[in-house]
Amino acid sequence: MSWQAVVLTLFPDMFPGPLGSSLAGRALKDGIWSMQAHDLREHGLGRHRTVDDTPFGGGAGMVMRPDVLDTAIEAVTAEVVLPVVYLTPRGRRLEQSDARRFAAGPGIVLLCGRYEGVDERVLEARQVEQLSIGDYVLSGGEPAALVLLDACVRLLPGVMGSDDSATEESFSDGLLEYPHYTKPAEWQGRPVPPILLSGHHASIAAWRRTQSEDATRNRRPDLWAAHTSRSSSIPFQQQ
Ligand code: 6GU
Image 1 (spheres, rainbow, N blue to C red):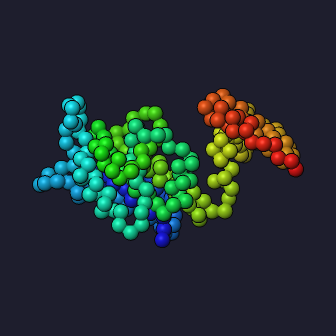
Image 2: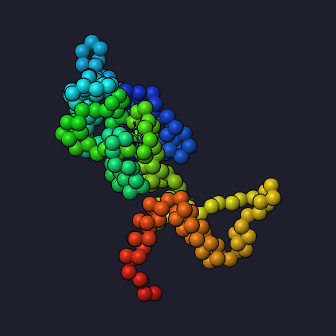
Image 3: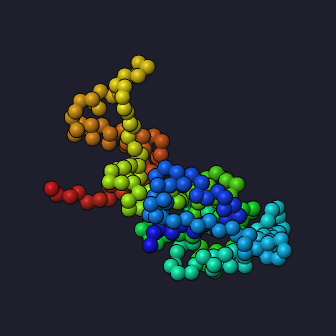
């Protein structure tokens, strides 16, 4: 059985979107993963297929109804049990470890909210995990769902091929990647760092490590703090 992505949204046309191209698109066609995007309005109430209503306590905007969302979740939780994730700026920030955890399982159900959000009770009742992709506001959870799916799909066996890209890159060791260079060796008066042309593999590895550390320290002090606290707590290993 392939890895299953189930999306609950008012805008099913947005899927698979960019995930129908490139690496993820190839894997989708190859059956490594599957995608179903369900229109939440199919579970809407009455002649107008209503999915939302005004917030208790007053305030602007509309809130998605718990009964509608519960029916929609129930309808897709048939055979295998999948974790349900609600994409919201109120969620905990998505990390690489979340992508690894979801990719290691059978798939995921992604709930995309619109309006001011969804009724809190259905999130409690269905033990829905809430995730955000960063501290900025999107008009809906759909682009965030695509981001989360991309992060998961590229980790599935057979998607990235046999190269080391998935393990060597940023975050595998908690550092940003070193800078990359290719031909020409000099471009617009800018030479490639000479060490990269030296053929000394150990020196190149050491230079890249320093570049990774410098970039992380300067650009991402939060990652650098986590990295240094982690590596200083790892006991020295005798050869
Ligand atoms: Cl998951 N949803 C919305 N609407 N905005 C966001 C987000 C999610 N993550 C960051 N901004």
